[in-house]
Image 1: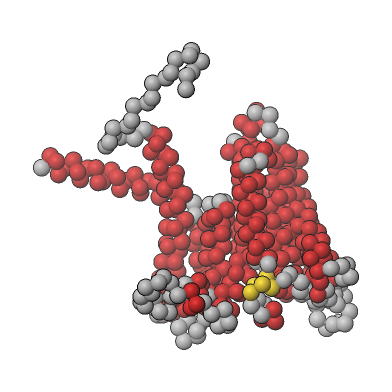
Image 2: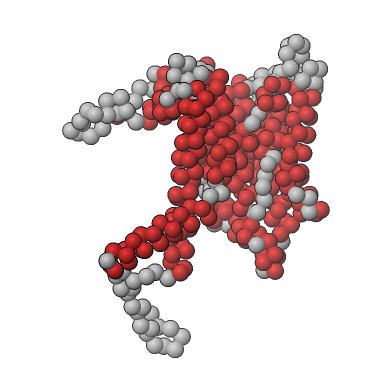
Length: 424
């Protein structure tokens, strides 16, 4: 192919084998290595320290504890040869080993039910991060979405099932977007820090929700005067259970909606003008403004879209397995805060958030009193172990520079050892 002068440019000379790569090439390598190694090491260090805490405080074997948590999460069901893995299959793996009716399958269903909102609240944090914002308001946005979903689930009971579900979910998503958009609007117009405003909005959502579903509240079920709970949603608003027994909270189609949200997140950030502008503002707001990008507009849209993901999470839980909303749920929800750890460990990428949500979902379900064998570890303490690991993940997740420094230091040590050997 000729250049503008009509002459065919010479092909670049191949880099000789063993040549020292350029600074840019080395930086790209470090960034790629950090993108994979950092979250893995973060999780390993968190589990290691958590295991040391288990041994120091209870004397229990950390390995046995983690095995019991893994078993309780149901993840072993994904390997049909996990029980007889030593058996040789001459014709390949015996996939008939997947029994969908055993306890392990039930545990995995419960884990994936937890993973579903974790994916969405993780996206709610990650999208704001990409715009340089820190969305602490996932809890409030989730609560607003759940409240909206329960009301729309009670209304329109005459509609056919799929249409009723879609209307309730859209309404909850828009409610979450509006709640998140308030923080974005305040950031864009007054410069109010989103961390402060989202924390305040969390408390507003909590107490407004407590009023609505509490005793004598507008949404309290009049048939249960002694219980602060809303009326159950109509049957037509229930999400379809595609795996497991609906009476035992089988896995619903909301899981696929969460997976679709991961795809939407990736496309929105990497294949749209809006995603380009959001990332540009996140890299350098002043440079983006100089380039003609409206920083204020992107602040508002980023927080609104983040709120939409969290509001959708609230609707999926409500329509998928809760079916009504009670005061205890409104005041004890922590899914938005766990979403922060999910986004941080997943490094704000779609694939990373998926695996991070799976890890935290397995921890939450595997440490429940129903699943964890009390002879191995006391279930009432296991929840604290989950929170310890979650906190350690947040603590160590910013270890990019440390990991890269150790990576470079290791190379320097090996190089000096090689030079010393050559001189000797």
